Length: 394
Ligand SMILES: *Cc1c(COP(=O)(O)O)cnc(C)c1O
Image 1 (cartoon, helix red, strand yellow):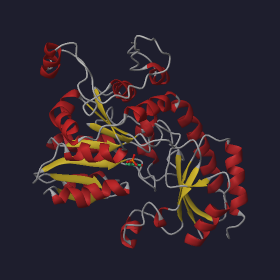
Image 2 (tube, rainbow, N blue to C red; image 1 turned 180 degrees about the vertical axis):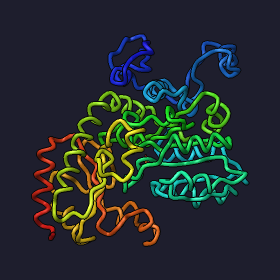
Image 3 (cartoon, protein in one colour; image 1 turned 135 degrees about the vertical axis):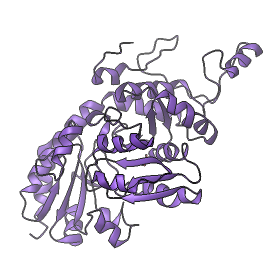
Image 4 (cartoon, rainbow, N blue to C red; image 1 turned 90 degrees about the horizontal axis):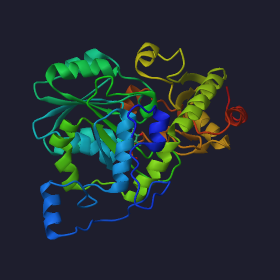
């Protein structure tokens, strides 16, 4: 298999292993276990003397294809596919920490990720500090003698702030800590955290990787040494394994990832530019626009503006609700990365559990709306917004 494939080719062919039938499409190996030719063969497999699968909780052929394809795309040595994005995040954090360790995380995190850091980890004696991750000096200041992990998301949900990944990695390396990047919003095509110095990358494959709203999934990628020493046993014995059926769905999804992300990013950029001109809108945040407050970092670490747009309506919650209700092509949903355009009001959905102060800290106001661009024709999306904005007062 060619190691020199460009991403679009990797995503169609990478990791494929064919059965003796020579099927064109990747096969679904919907099996829990595997049989051995002899007792001796079983013994050798368990001793690790021969290659092959043992039990689907540990690994299985369709999942293996998905993991290998993700490794090629990410430029990672090894990966583990998980049943959801949160299974990936929680495993990546917990597998390497013990009571008495300390984690530093950017406070602008996906809600469940924040729960793992703030609520779950402390139950097991793991300390945490949440910071405004936009400024490198905050990472430096938060370091303690027991700091083992830095955790961040960039761009962030929903306000699309970015964190200087290379800068954070430098601080982490100086103290021997590991950097975990939740790279969902950027997608593996627009940002490569491992190349920027991060040690571990996690995805909710539920988002762009499936991209068609069908199944949950996740993946953890890193170097072989980190996976063997930290994740390998944790993964086998706690059981976050992905169903082979979902691994297959994700394999088929990932074939078209570059086409979808290209179209979605173009649509996001066009919608962002359109919204920025409308009198009802106070501000538009899109990592692909020159007026993004951190455009310099974006230029250094991202290859595109992403598929998401965050904007704020002058009329607050009433205006946000009126806009969402008047949209027709764009659907109201808290998911993202789908081929269908989706819109959500974070203050009353994805971020409703935060206090008013915590929301304000993150820049989420009652008028904040998050738009996830689909693959529709951008003219139809702009027409939908233009028509819907007529029901919103300037
Ligand atoms: C959706 C999401 C997750 C969680 O993924 P699930 O597949 O829903 O478990 C984690 N991080 C980010 C940034 C997400 O968008």
